[in-house]
Amino acid sequence: ILAGLAYFYMVAVWGGYIFVINIIGVHAGVLVLLGRYSTKLHRAYTAFYIVGTTLAIQVPVVGWTPIRSLEQLGPMAVFVGFQMIEYCEVMRRKQNLGRKDAWMLRIKVFGAALLVAIAVLAALIPTGYFGPISARVRGLFVKHTKTGNPLVDSVAEHQPASPEAYFQYLHDVCY
Image (cartoon, rainbow, N blue to C red; front, side):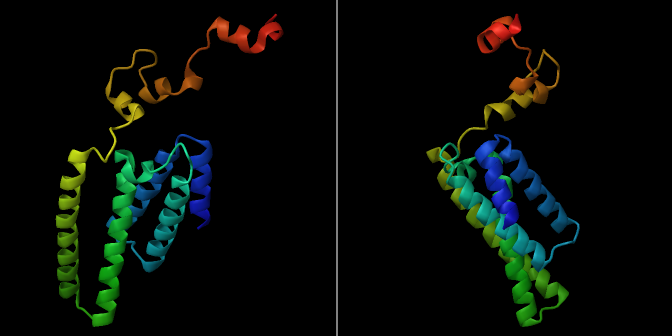
């Protein structure tokens, strides 16, 4: 919950909040791939994602972007995946399923979810529900001539200021 509140702060004051949610989502997803999934991990990521995303939507300039942005679909997919894994784990414990039966349940649950996701995406993509990829992401794929590094070129603080800017903001202090 505290991580969700910290994420909300990042959304409210810093434009790099998309990086934060993607890194946390990647970290949680990699933990699952490494076999480190647990109910505690599920609870932690679920609380973070629900609190953080719900609060992020409240920021006026962000709005519904966390649900509609292509850059933020990965963490949402991890969230949905965690819910499906936890459902399978609860069913495995309740029904005392063996290893083979537990894997069959996972395959059925994830297969059904895949079909539903394909249907939902097929319905939403033509309507333009998802916005285009942001200019910052698109900028990673064009040639950068100033420094050769797209991340450095995209940040205004790394650009040299013009003499007019110094005069405009500092005026007499410059002389």
